[in-house]
Length: 357
Image 1 (cartoon, rainbow, N blue to C red):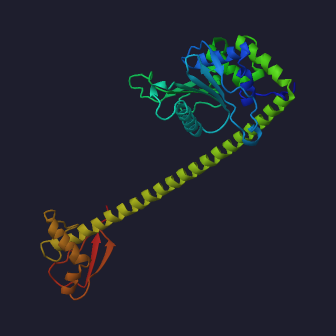
Image 2 (cartoon, rainbow, N blue to C red):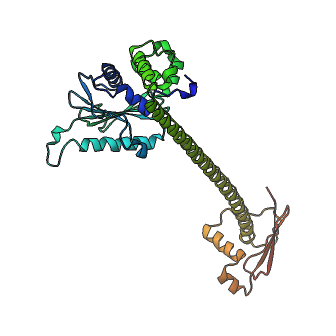
Image 3 (cartoon, rainbow, N blue to C red):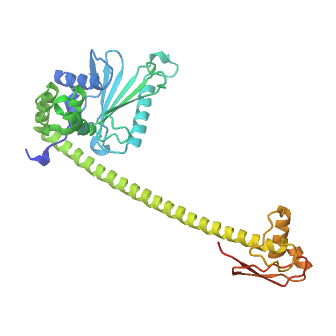
């Protein structure tokens, strides 16, 4: 058989073919093994409720080829392959699906005690990007006390690609039952352990028989092609999202850098203005000698009110300007000495020399 004609075991149609027939003991064995390996259920009897392989509307609407099972205890188990789509979308969709199945169990006015738990198994052909677990369980009750016995919804996501990491860590010879099953579904007919377990031998036998049916094979190949196209679209979408996020992050960093530079400029300007302000104030708060002969004359005892008043005098307070008839022209120059000008006089021009630190 040509390698390109191989159909993966996680193909929707092929997987349902493995387990759909209530009259086939091997189908029931596979179904029971998968359910008991993933969930805490111990199945005495199982009954597949939707045994049709190809619904009449499948080709037009791409109907979901899930497997709906009812146990002898009344629980419903739904098994579905999810070969593509992002986890957030998948997770919300299956929660919605589970709630619908719960609601369908009773009519309005019925006793709620009639409701039976609904178990959802999603064989998800992806890695667990958050926790790197093979199986993650979700229920609709709080887990503070680890008491989910009253839950009606149990969801199990099996991240099939995680089996590659597990094999690297512990080796194929040390896989448990669930890991063996996932390894078979993930690697399909090319799995080198397919004949080592009863589950593998049954899947191999059914796979070979499936491939002899041209109609089923062609439909499965069409599904595989469709899934491949959807995966490619999903990857492209994720790349676009990542590129947009990266561009947004770079833009944010650039804005932060620009903001930081601007803040540094403002800070430097404020420091310069404060220095000038203090130097200007020193001209006014000097003893009034006009030229004291000191370098950097300063009066640290000046009150805040006097500081502000002096600042207004030097930099153009409107009221003070009116009193002095015309505004002061203040120029600043670098020098080693500062000329101190006596206050309480009309000042046309002030030149302040100050020493740089």
